[in-house]
Amino acid sequence: MGVSGELNNDGCVITCAISGVAANRDQCPAIPYTSEDYAAEAKRAYESGASVVHIHARFPDGTPSFRIEEYRTITQSILAEVPDIVINYSTGAVGVPMDERVHHITALRPELGALNMGSMNYAKYSPRRKQIVFDFVFANPFSEIIYLLDKMNSAGVKPECECFDTGHIGNVAPLIDMGLIEPPIQFSLITGVLGGAPADARTLGHMAELVPDEVSTWEVIAIGREQWRMVAAAAALGGNVRVGLEDNFYLPDGAMAKSNGDLIEAAARLVQLSGRSVASPAEARAQLSLPAVPDRTALASWRPK
Image (tube, rainbow, N blue to C red; front, side):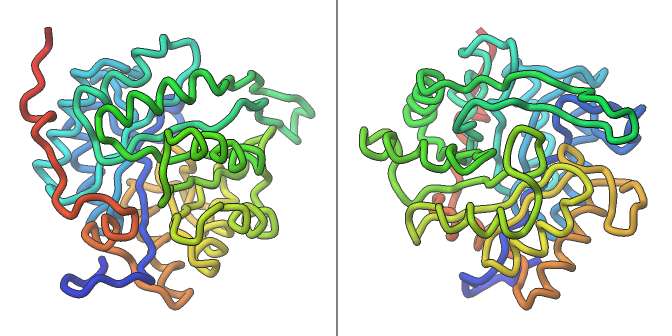
């Protein structure tokens, strides 16, 4: 963890993407299902160096949930274990009504909300089978981006602009011009999805150069086992990093992680080997231009209608 006291601007913010929605325990036994599982995983991640948790909610049987109830229960359980961690909610979904993609954010008001910045082919290729084994179009038109952004703005939640390719970074420009988003902006530069930016250091360096304001911040999200090279590259370039069971199950040596804490520990080690420190939650809030003391009143007061 980053040391307490004076804030360290060179600290690397490590985000833990706890679960995602697609994978299950048949693929990785460590994936959390219940709110207690989420809390235990968040605590392990925090103790290993994470200052932010990215949450996709699930029902206790492991199926994805977009309901406010599950987001609230999971978040409260996490904060009971790690009260100072930064909370980040997902809005990404396919085939889910727009209001359900964002109502947990407007109701519970986390500090950060993920905002996909463009449409793309989203696929997976199997070299062994010589087939595209996963194939769909991930549609995020400007009308939907603006809808989600308006909702986040109304709730006082900072958007995290998720960019799967270089054009997605440029999509921020008209939103700035319209006054819908203001620097400093937090970017997530996502690599390793077939249809988007490849997971190599040269591509990441180019994407980082395109981030439009020097006071804005960025993190890398790399899907699959190439993640570790991208974490090392991001740390060296001065960016932040995200790891977790949503993105990759495997440690640098190829062993399957037994918890999110294992993945965070490996990321923290790479960050420190690059000559940087690991940011504490207080340092993360300072870097990301978030209030020093998070407002949890909406989380505490929300009741189902």
